[in-house]
Length: 188
Image (tube, rainbow, N blue to C red; front, side):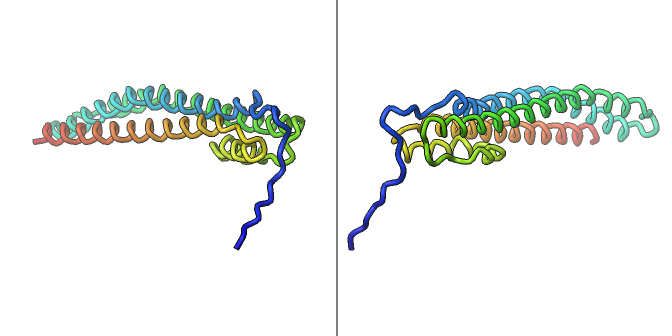
């Protein structure tokens, strides 16, 4: 049995495979990975301070009942305010990056059309990071025979974000177990 392969639409040789907006969609993921690392690093100090205060408060309440005034609780919650502000700002930056990625994907979609690509990956996929840079690279490669770079940048940035998050989660678990162990030692 013979298989007949019908070639898909192609673009003329020499047609650019990358646009500045296509690169923006890929590098938005790199910026998001950096922002995630910064957020987790900033949160680490607050988490350690919070656990120290919580350990002190719980130990004081156990060892000297009736001596724990409401002020340690107020102090503990007020120390969380900078973390709350930092989370809010970083969250707003993340939303800004998402908006930049969506606008860049739309502009890239339009620019690929002007370059003569008859089939283009739809820009609305950019709402699901990292789908657009990967899908875009596949569709462009099928028509031009090149254009994998944005795919590899998107995959590397997504993998970096995943590894950073897993590493920080492991650190957090170890820190929490250490705090619990120190609380149990002080209570005995």
